[in-house]
Every structure is written in structure tokens, then in C-alpha cells.
Image (cartoon, rainbow, N blue to C red; front, side, top):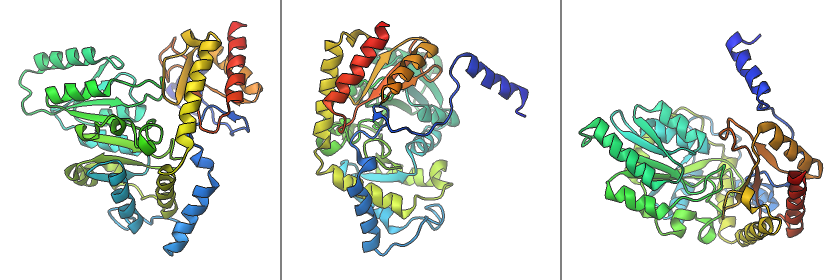
Length: 384
């Protein structure tokens, strides 16, 4: 039996229609996964990753230990050097996942006496890392530079002399639950003005924006204006892991102090081979163009079906239709799924109460006919 307090939490989730459960993926038309370019199901990437290991005579299944012990095999060096060059960064450090990268960075880099200002809709992994640090943290209104400015000024007034403190400002280039994009140039200018460190999570921009999918910061020419970038491989790259891009000194610090890096077994060679091959494919694929064509087609269609007022404005691959109430949004999601389309409801408390939504993830492989049908179904079910 669960302890009483734990069972009470489960019961509350049931009462709020918000209880999570694992389910097997059904063969529905994909409007829910982060596999924006179809790389996760690419036979070419699968075969080429295997061939890379064969060519290098690598016939092992695991890393055998942490990277600081026995797990730092040669593929790591090749990948970190090539990805640093691809992303126009001084160095890159591979982590086992985006979660590990964010927890490792934010739990170790901000020190006692430092301050972290983060967007109120920042990813849970960043929040967890910040909570594990000894720095003080403050959230600012979503994508609101003026509120950030006010919070920083209030912090100065409250804390007095902060000459020995560092300030970190954290945002995402594409937000995972809204799909919207902040004024990155505005954030860069603000951070330069007050001499603080900007950190940007590019999880949902990598492989989607910029030449060959380098990300939004590079598309805007801002990559050298930020302290650190976190790019993950589990979305458009279709595999697993993440990198933190930054200076040589930052990499050295993380290797020595990021606990999620130090105390975990390294990625197996096959995972690293897949990352390397996926990036090679990214440099030559036409799927990014197809994805952006589908994004524009989807935006046009929600206007044509008079659904535009229900959607958060987005130019990314993530589009969210606000349908308040866990029970209501789940019911509409089930109706759409029953018609063969995998569209997921996002419930509170994952999003604030009243902001429950259907989250549509677009892909290069979705057809215009599929987009037409799923939005026509949505319009019908919402009206009913």
C-alpha cells in the first residue's frame, strides 16, 4: 500500500481528471510526437549509424562507465568537435538527455549569492535544476522583457550590493507548450546592457530553424551573444541526448561540477553513432523545407476554419488550441483519436488551470490532406 499522503495525491489527480498513465502508441496519423523531420523512423539513418560502427570496428553495447571513468570513447570527441563547428560554438559537451543537461547546468553553474531570472513557462527540467542550486531565483512573465527589467531592478533594491553576484537570465527559443518565440534580440540587448548571462534552451528550434536546422539563435546571428545554449537530439534529430554549447571554461566547469554528467554512465556507442549520422543527414535534407511548408499551410487552415481565435499564435512546429477544462479537452482529443489522428490533450497542472489545450505537433511527413481533415474534425467537435 502507498503511504496515505501519496495515495491522497493520486486521488486528487483522479478527481481533477488529470491522472497520467502509460499507453502503447497506436498507429494513428502523427500530430503529437516531436519527430518533426521524420528522422526517428529513418531507415537511412538507422542503417548508416550501424555502418559507421562497423567501419570503426566498434562492437560493444554499452559505454561501461561514466565518461570520467571508462565511458569516454572516441566517438564523443568526434561528435563534440563537429557539433561545436556546426553550431558555431567554442566547445560542446554531450549529456545523456536534455533533462540531464538542464539539471546539470542549472544545479551547478549559478552559485550561492547569484540570481536566476527565468520565464514563467520555462521547461520543468530547468526549474528542477534551479531548485537544486544555491542561487536565488525569480520568475518573470512569459516573454515579457519589461517585467524582467522590473524584477531585476527590484532585486537590486532588495539585495543591496550585488557587485559580487552573477545574474543569469533563462528563456527558450521555442516554448514547448505554447510554440511561441521570444524577442531573442531584445533579451540579448538587455543582458548586454546589465552585464548578465543569457542561457537559451533551443530544444524545439534545433533542426527546425536556421540554415540546415542550426537553430534560431544562429539564424538571427546571436549565437556568440549568449553564455550557453542547450540543444537536444530527442526532437527534430530523432535520437537521444543533448549538448551544451559554450566556452572552453564552461565545459571544463561542467565536467568537474555537473553531477548529472559526472555520476551517470555514458551514452552507448550506437547512440553516439546515431547522433553523428543524424547531423550528417540534417546538412542535406529537404525535410526542413517541407516542415515549414506544412507550418504555413496549418496556419492558413486554422484561419479558413475560423479556429484562429482558439490558437496561440505560433510560427514553429508546435500549435496549441486552448480548450479550458481537463474533462472537456480530453473528450475532444478522444474524439479526434477515434477518427485516426494522434492529437494529445495537455492538462493542468502541466499547464495552468483554464489553459488546458490540444497540442498539435507538425511534421515534414504530414500531408495537406491530413492537416485539412484533422482541423475540420476539430472545428466540428468544438462546435458540438
